Amino acid sequence: MAGLRSVTVGTQNLEQTIHLFHNILGLNYERQGSKNAVRFGDADLSPGTRVHFIEVPNYTTDANHVLSIGLRTPTDLGLEEYQSILSQNEIQFGEVIEMNDHKHFEFKDGNGQFFDIYSNERNSGVPLGMPTDDSTVNPLHQIQGLGPVIVQVNEVLLTASILSKVFGLDHFAEYTPTTDADFKVQVFRIGEGGLGGELHIFQAGEPIDMAEYGSVEQIEFSTDSKQAYRNAVQQLEIIGIRYQTLEQKDSESVRITENSGLPFILTLEKA
Image 1 (tube, rainbow, N blue to C red):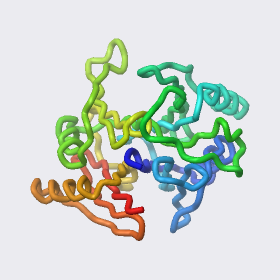
Image 2 (spheres, helix red, strand yellow):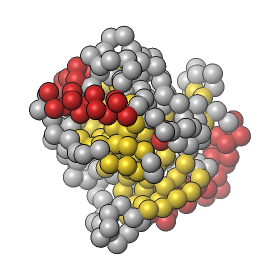
Image 3 (cartoon, rainbow, N blue to C red):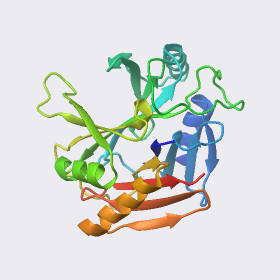
């Protein structure tokens, strides 16, 4: 699989986040290492389905780079199912709208972080994961994959250059988010593309300063090409960007932090 692998954001209250994403939205989950982290995903917590949360005292989304995290349900009926679920739990949500022929709607978690649930009905590219039996949601409608992630950065041209020249993402589109917006959102395709392989970036209206508690957010891509991974490391060496590496049994990763303070990770899937 080559596409979005995982997205990490913060939360003020891990138990409330588990209640929302597991008990209400029906995602599978596991706590990670320390007690203040958890990840959600499909039945196998597969790459391409993972949303990670880190509990941080006094966490706020005011300085967030990640404005919206996309989550995919298999069909248009899944959108109706999730709107009904949110309504039953008195969670506000937006109307269903379309982006490039893909239907979706938005809601916010208790931290004020936006999420968009997309229908995968007209999508191609990065496939969905597997539904889990241990869920409050019908397997036909369960969220089973990441969708487009929308982020703001301090210098969009610089970030765009890193995404394309270092990580090999394909800049293939741009759009104006609203009729009165004076800027355009740049769309990058990762790996197999489609909703599960899109990153949307735009210039922040005000400079994003690092929060007192440091960097929490993180966006991870995956590739199954050893050459693409080697090229990324080589480009980092040539440009002189500082990076860290991590090698595990089934993967190898390189991590950088761009000038806005947002970390990006490229992971080579070895299996």
